[in-house]
Image 1 (tube, rainbow, N blue to C red):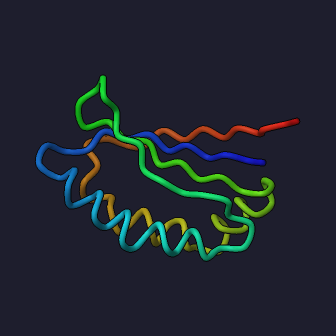
Image 2 (cartoon, rainbow, N blue to C red):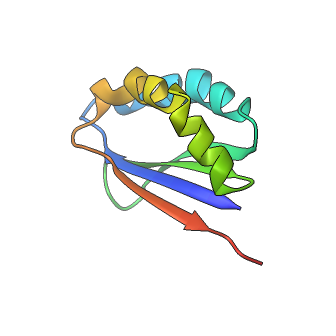
Length: 96
């Protein structure tokens, strides 16, 4: 399994709007992509307005294909006006 985490701080007053767009538009799109296992938004309890977008994929090739398709950029564009700064991205591989 391959996991992508995208962490970003959200501008004051924009979290609710960003959460709505994420859950209503981005989640269904990502879940429909081949190889996607799950997608959700995590909201920090310790750092105000800090969120992490979590996506998990059967393997890195599926995650890379989603990004290469242009859908990733389209989805980021739906919420980027809420960003207070540039996001930080991390990738992880789960080996069993």
